[in-house]
Image (tube, rainbow, N blue to C red):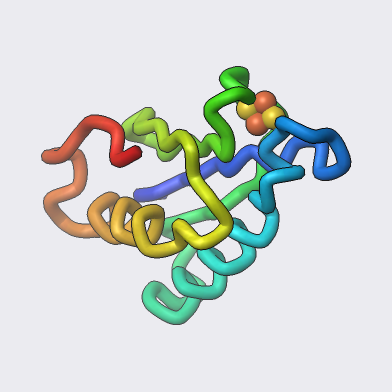
Length: 101
Ligand code: FES
């Protein structure tokens, strides 16, 4: 697996939590975009996760194997996550690090 992204979708009905901020919508949009670009390759996953910890910085996500974190995402941040997935899926994966947001 080249890119395994976890997006926190915790507590959609609780204010201040990633799920309440629209993270499931973000996840579905990103999955669709990845499917268009990468097909049904088994080399990536876009999974939902429970609380990742820093709720006040949500929507939070983390990309493995890099361990790269994303904070303050909105449901419209498909492009930035997709670009990170694309880098992770590229032959040069692992040459970049750090947080995007
Ligand atoms: S609810 Fe998403 S990090 Fe806690």
